[in-house]
Image (tube, rainbow, N blue to C red):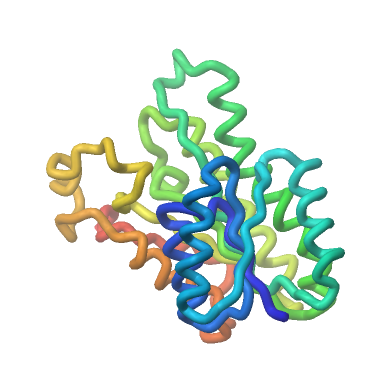
Length: 243
């Protein structure tokens, strides 16, 4: 059984990715969540409606022991399952000016995005190398590429993932494993619902926020065999903010 795991897969961009992968006929989708079980179950129902199978796995990606425990139990219960696609989507924001930022806000944001990447990807990486196939997609952000005032912690976490993507891609490319990052700009999700869209869209050449489904389309392409010669890339999906 060929599987994909999507961290932070219960809502927003994560949910859209799970649904898109189901549409692309990925057999089995592991939907990770931390707190919102109802949303995770909704995502699973949508995946199953599309003819795929899936299950929800509750663990905090930033907690190494918990992540390894849950994934080990899953792997032991599913000895014939092969995770081929890893989408490191889980992330949190705790915005604020750096001079007033408590260490807890710094650590928790970096822990979820950066250590979360390590905990999940490191668990599966040797299996991918043995199977000589894999797709690793890291969700970064315009903040990780450009840096965003009021988000030094988030920019640091996502910027580190940019470096990780480029380095790991070089280590595993010979084994037919690609590692890419997707850097969304302003996407309409729970995370951006308090933003002033009318004000912000003036700085976006496309003159609108993006939709989660548009990001999911790009992730699904990078997760497919069609993208086999693309690795180590950071692909911006932001309506032309940099142009």
